[in-house]
Length: 182
Length: 122
Image 1 (cartoon, rainbow over the protein chains, first blue to last red):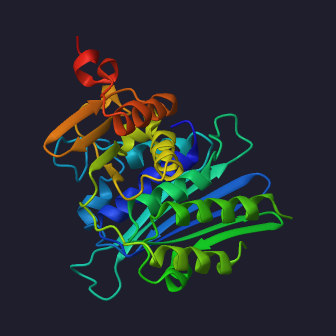
Image 2 (image 1 turned 90 degrees about the vertical axis):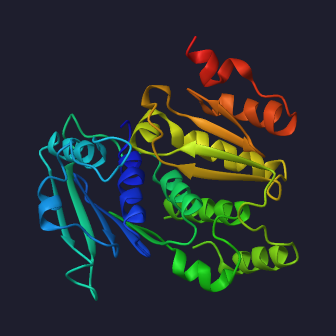
């Protein structure tokens, strides 16, 4: 992947696939580090699947037996001297409190750090593809905070779908405004 | 934060329109957004379609959707256009081709044969 924001788009699809109703994407940056957390309330994974989930030869896909999403994110983190960790609570065992949490940690000053890239397009693409799922996006940078919570938008919009082009444009604008503001 | 007032205005504008039910559009554009598609450049392709459809006011008649991997990763980004019972599969799509597909196929009604999987496999 050329940008970390593409990995985020890819990994967040796993949450959607796991029937999450809320996906939280949190980016925490310092001058030299970046922590990415993707947290969902989906159906989770069994301990056995969790153990081999970063192996490219494990996937939930039915068309074939290879899945590259998490292995690629793991590689992107580890090649900067960082790490990837995943924890999960399976719905079958924890009916009240289930979901998956993926954390990736990067050293930004490492030569092999993949730039974050166009994270706004990632958020817009996720909302466009899954308008019934809620997304809570939070990006903390030194001296700056960018956030978007689709639950708040839904309250205002009523039954207007979040994937309406006008709404997608509004989401893009509001994020751009927050990134460019002081 | 951009004002929620603007969002309210969007709601009021849209409430006057008939809300489109899923599946009622005449044409459906589907972009492959699995790992393979994303890595090959599907995200800007998807966003180009969304923007073009909005810009040309085709929201009521054309739907843009996303799908997973259809097993032809080497041809990604793959875009399928459905209309009635017919399906046209475009391969190696980029934002420029996406614009052209909207113009010639979606609006003009003529599929661009040279961008299809049939032409790529020859």
